[in-house]
Length: 263
Ligand code: SF4
Image (cartoon, rainbow, N blue to C red; front, top):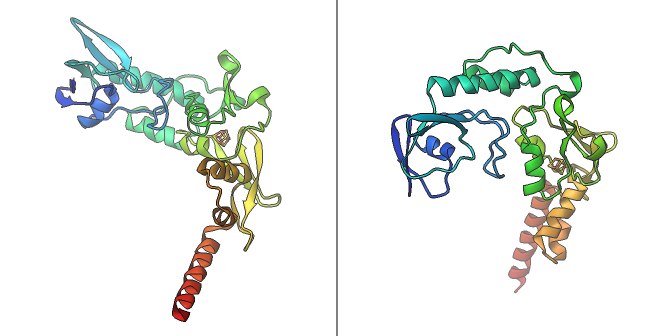
């Protein structure tokens, strides 16, 4: 197990760990946005930069994807590292000035405003961290969204910026979006879930007993497919909401008790 020194604190971490892992173990806070344990770190937001000692000079590196080596010395709270992260945060704030989670994180980092011009309306509130695209591809296995355009026009979108049939409205991208830009909207009139801003709309499964809205139809089908359970009882239960499933299970227990009394 390599030993790493972060801000003067020595910690032993597992082989293959990152500087961020070591810092967390040492109790040193480093801000992150695009890092999530469920996916490989794209290191796109650059918010986790730290200084790494290299002999008589120091290099700025992203801590979320930099693997530790034996006897590494890291400065996470040095003036240069803090200033570099604050500079990145000012750029991010220009992209997502209305994001409350981002503004809260900025305040914690000592950044309260941005000198940069705010981005155009169509790009507003997406920091292009890529966490949503990574989750969609690596965890959900759909790759329904990706990066489109270049330069100032770069955005996360579905192919051809049209609603994608590959989206199953699972909501995973919305759950991980660190700035809260991706939202799941329910359309009660059509019983559909819409993933905003990607405009994908998907039918919701309704409980067969009480009619309550549940998960999206394609998500329910994907779960059943992955479970690989060729069991009619399981499929029957999947068509019911949690409350109706409980009622059904309770009724089945009572029926079993009645039958055992007969025996
Ligand atoms: S809601 Fe659609 S775009 Fe988002 S992760 Fe799920 S499948 Fe991908």
